[in-house]
Length: 334
Image (cartoon, rainbow, N blue to C red; front, side):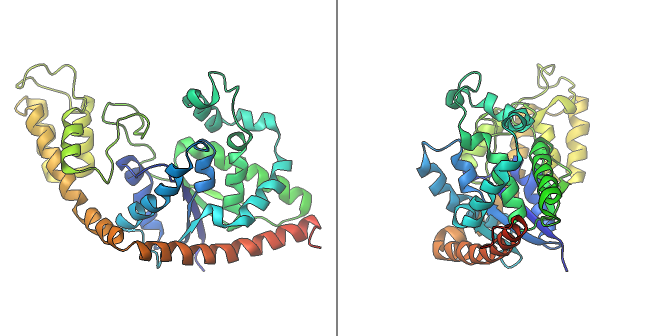
């Protein structure tokens, strides 16, 4: 029997290459090796988009199309929508008794995200909502509802998984061995840098290349990418390790061509403009099969809905069994 994997993505926008190389590549490998459940986490998205539900609603379809376009196979992966699994909400209520408010405030991921959302939660988090503070509890319910044995995470998400593990251990210590203790699966590329050199590519940072970007948008973004600041003139020797264009060449350019890029950059016989144009061409070529698959699903929205409906039904059956066991352990299976 295959081990089970559970992961989730918030429908707040289209996928960018940070998502693809940081998580998507891992998903493509894992879908052949594990019993894979993939959650479209719309409830979690509402914790900081509660005042913009249309954004979340529209992006459920967009995100699903993005995932299908990169090659996630619905015959191997169970796609499901979080809000359509009421068992998750019920488990969240039960688990909330096992976590203190002070512990939630200490969660590094929560602290970091609150500080990034000052316009929503205030400079010191004084307007933080109960839902946002408690989303690690909801995430624990997501994982345990489907008996997820492994959870693919980036290093910035490790504190959330640790919170889940604490909840599982406490539940099992009080009510008996009921829940599966999840393990982390770290991606080799846990974080992809932004075009501006920022350590993280992000939607809100304005430094991302999206899978749905047009040729024109990709060209404009890449042409603005940060290069070696010490290279002033076209023929100046440069350090490719200081250049974001070379950083992306390593993702999109074949090895033999990459060696040429590096050698010419160091020798001062490669101009930044021509180097960027070569990168643009390689990115567009890389996107060709992704765009082709995405167009198919955009033209067949009913097929996307069917994938979500069938996956959600399967997921709910699994969650019902977990909730049944939890209630029995808690002696509330009246």
